[in-house]
Amino acid sequence: MKKIFLIILVIVGLGCTKEATIPDDILPQEKMIEILIDIHLLEEKIDYLKLEKDTSLMLFKAYEFELLKEHEVDTAEYQKSYRWYASEVRTMSRMYETIVDSLNVRHKRVSKKSKVDDEGEPAKKRNRPRKLNPTKQKADKEDE
Image (tube, rainbow, N blue to C red):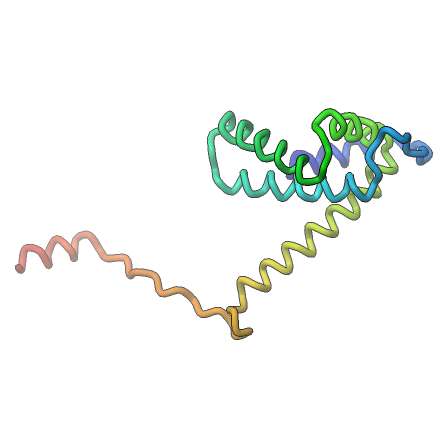
């Protein structure tokens, strides 16, 4: 997600053009925003898995295809729309303001949920097994 955000910042910094009228064969802004939010969430989930780069890419492509199918958009339509929006700096910049705000709200909601259990009570810290000192374990075994 950091990479995409940096790319968008560069695009925003490079140009200041008038906002153009969206052609009929380009996805509407609202639809594109929904898709981009889902794509960023997908990237985050795959990043979390800490897989090899080629495995992550294959997994992302497979899930991206399914995600676009859920939005009733084919890959070519999405790519064409993405290229068009990327060429329209002001429009893309405004879209990413909405996308970033939405992602921040989701992250805050998730972090609040993780701090509160199902009954609305603060979540208890998990009891973790105590780490044992290996030399103490050895001494305990010798005493047996």
